[in-house]
Length: 411
Ligand code: SDX
Image (tube, rainbow, N blue to C red; front, side):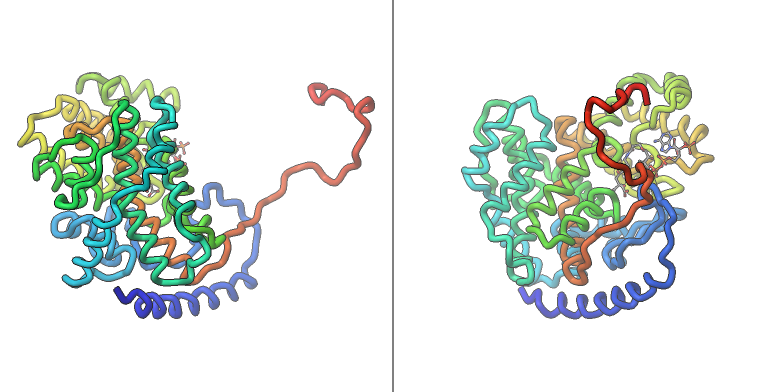
């Protein structure tokens, strides 16, 4: 695969833009605190665009609804990482390489067997993703072949490691990937030891497309910051996995199902929300830094859930979820707070028989594509991230002997 050409051109364009913007930095250098960097552009990117007021999301210019309807996760990953949809030969090559690299060294599997079975699968994933860096040299990130190989390995091995920990924590040996199964079907097979219904695999593949990329969300920003130090891509992904795990980010999908079960019935939704809002608790699966309308991914996930319910039977929690959405819209809609991607995803995964604490690792399986796209883009026009601060600590002072110190409690 010729990764050099496309990559170099993109680099040259981006480098020129970054140099020009660096000049403007001198002109308007001023200290305004922006908690959480809200609204602060920290890079140029051509990977993903979000129109938060209209609820539009595009990957490299293609709408998420069109990609979910027409594409596959691997094809979408290729698009995100290399900027264009692959031609048939490029797709065959990429798919074949990913299949060839699905297996994980026994050393990683044996390491996972030492993890406590009660540990959270996101911690297992972060540890095992970082361990991949032990197997591959870290000083070749300016070599397009090294970049391509790292992309293939991470896209291929992350699902294997998530499925492996699931079996290991049940006291079983992990099973090997099946080369005759496509990406999504193979993951479900490795996870459940059974070949799943084609509809389940197709819906799961669409979920992976929906979660693959979302511009500068917290975990992608972590990936960029880590990438900007020129460390290896395995450390970049491990850093992003740790960030995604938090309940305000990728970890929300687990908590949403917990909340729906706590509400218990559609008639209780209003009272539950009134109590949560009164005690200033965040309603999990709602709100977004970018969207001021319903997250377009939430709407597509609802359609996927209904497709599964039609085939495999309804989930009574779905009526509760829809009631929560209606009641929340009355209370939080005026503040621009609507369902985000995490609100309905758990109901899809539950119908697919996926354990709740694997919802966020599955988010990570998908988002690796977006993190790697941003990793490549960062390398193309790198400047190490080093923001500044507004210092609010003590003014310079001299050290005093301990007996002369007044107890800090008296300060
Ligand atoms: C993801 O960034 C991405 O793109 C992330 C993501 C991706 O694809 O990578 O989309 C994936 O992380 C989705 C978000 C999953 N998290 C949750 O569902 C957790 C619940 N949501 C909130 O914690 C919150 O909405 C955030 C974290 C998602 C966004 O937080 P912001 O933009 O920092 O907003 P904020 O916390 O400053 O809230 C602004 C106001 C506050 O009210 P006031 O104090 O101004 O009166 O809105 C309120 C908040 O209390 N608010 C909520 C709320 N979210 C915001 N009130 C109740 N419930 C909520 N969920």
